[in-house]
Length: 424
Image: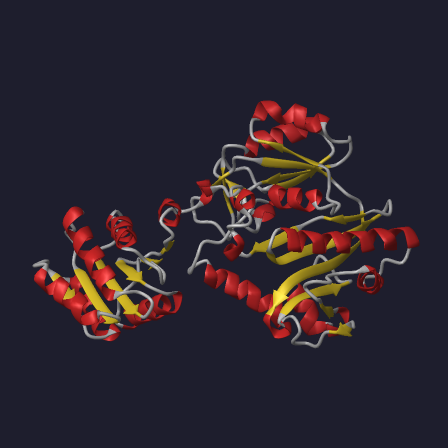
């Protein structure tokens, strides 16, 4: 049954976005470029603009030959928002441009390709643009919003729709909750003709031909959601064009990383060139790394413990240099690799190990610490706090190693000692 969402019904979207940002600090998250997401949509029968990709200036003309004459949209392909208001290291402004002039397309591509794009979401150095998407512009009559996502409140997937597309959906939910419809979905049944028709009607697709196309698009969006093990497929906007087509103009897709074993071809699409090299290095060993601006390297097990560790460091007047989570099933070699990554960062002046051994055996951590300290010739202070499974044996190993390891009995003591080590 369809129902109108309350003012709080979009908490699921807000929380998913917050969780996605937080999870970036816990585990590896798959991020695809815009054109890759549109290829996934197209492969599942969802209508998107015709487009071509340019990775070499000499290929621009051949790319244009694949497109119909008219107005073109030229977009720099980087993993960052605010592209349209960004600027390049060569002074060229805007990572998104519109033009009807084919010669202008070539000049725009030349100004973008191989240059670094700086936006409000990038570092001050920007991101190197290695691919440009040239797409046929569409003439929009109306914009709508559609999202399928996994929602804990409903214990499964939901379809969220609004005729107020092209806008911030949270703002729409707060100011005009009557313009939001939430439909709980049966994971086995999905979006059938009845649900698709009711939602399409709510979205304002009135012309019979356009209505049928909208129904078709919604059913294919569900097919995509299931086929790629998505956590979220958000289309904003899903538009009705002046020539009565229904097209997904922009998409945001979140993937279930736990399904990587089923989606190996999909995860192989990820481009690590834009990643922090340390993050890419860590992911090779199933470690989760996020670089920060401080000077205290943090090696922990578990995202919650990592967040607490960084908070306590800050409270004691220090600054974390990273978030490095070795996880619950860590092996001795992974501990070694974690130390290697931390010690190779010139900003790190002390390493703080904070491990609670529940699933993790503290002796595994201790052996990894000893091996890394010796083989890497570690020459910066090392503060270790261990608690949990086999902690006494782990402490004995550390003591008998003869290494200059500073131990602590609790997190606050460990953080305080780490901060002091930096200052001295």
